[in-house]
Image (cartoon, rainbow, N blue to C red; front, side, top):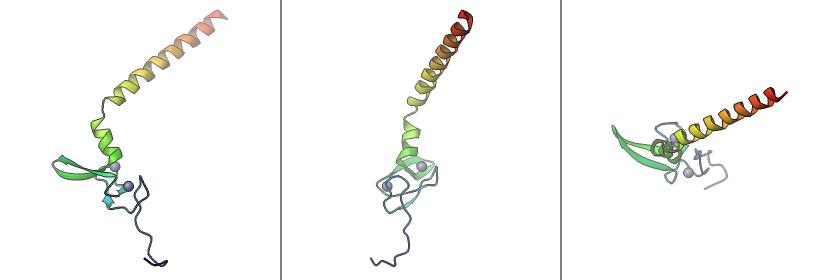
Length: 84
Ligand SMILES: [Zn+2]
Ligand SMILES: [Zn+2]
């Protein structure tokens, strides 16, 4: 290692030395921040994409909560307008 080393590709998650691109988002990730996913072949994806693929339970829940909050806000706004 000398001060004249070319800049090594950096992991998009932990800023360590990248090992290769994620198969989904194409960001460079290191070995620690990638997971092997079995599909039509074996792909290395970053832990974020791997999390998105497996934790589908979160998104509908968030959308559902968001819809309720927006609905309540709309009702509250309507009540405020009607009281005037
Ligand atoms: Zn990393
Ligand atoms: Zn990714």
